[in-house]
Length: 79
Image (cartoon, rainbow, N blue to C red; front, top):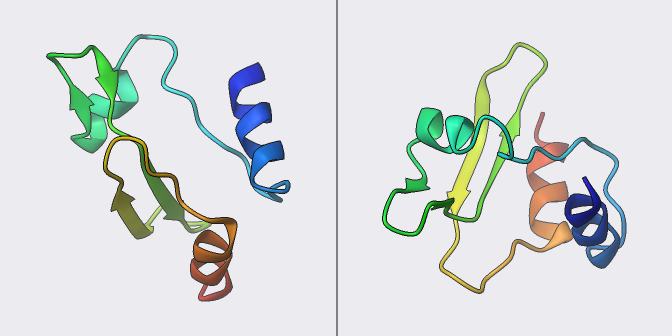
């Protein structure tokens, strides 16, 4: 998805896959409890999920805020 590539490029590149909740609309956000029904979009969030599918880090960001690559890489290094 072009918007994910643009965001990854903005962060300086990321060596891990990014997920978009494009179709079916809101399914992932609803599963993670971050879908904003009123606005019809997910809240911005970052998750680090290990190879066994266990969520090791989760953070929901306020509107307009984005995680830093340093923040996410620090969490990845803990795996």
